[in-house]
Length: 131
Ligand SMILES: [Zn+2]
Image (cartoon, rainbow, N blue to C red; front, side, top):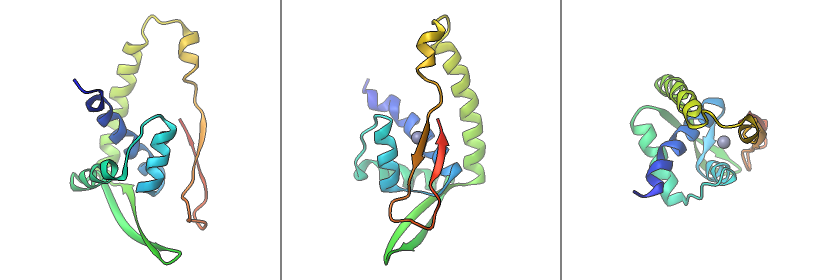
């Protein structure tokens, strides 16, 4: 089995998470995912965003920034419900994955504060996202 199949759900989950906190856009999300070790090209990410929108989990709008049109995405109410359910499943899986492991190995996973910056989007405040 291709490991990318395993990651595709994690990537969708990650996108929904960020889009529930703030407006996201393709290149910004590519940078964010790269920080987490997922290397995606626009040709891979955009179909994922479009698929999430087709499934009603994201909604997009075009915004004009410095004379350029940028498509930005937010999580819909349906997406919020899906995210909430998925978080419960992740919590359960997380517990099982790390069951019986010493706390020291889990402490590496303590929350970090990352700055998700919307490039060229000066009017939007920088959002601090606790991971
Ligand atoms: Zn993230």
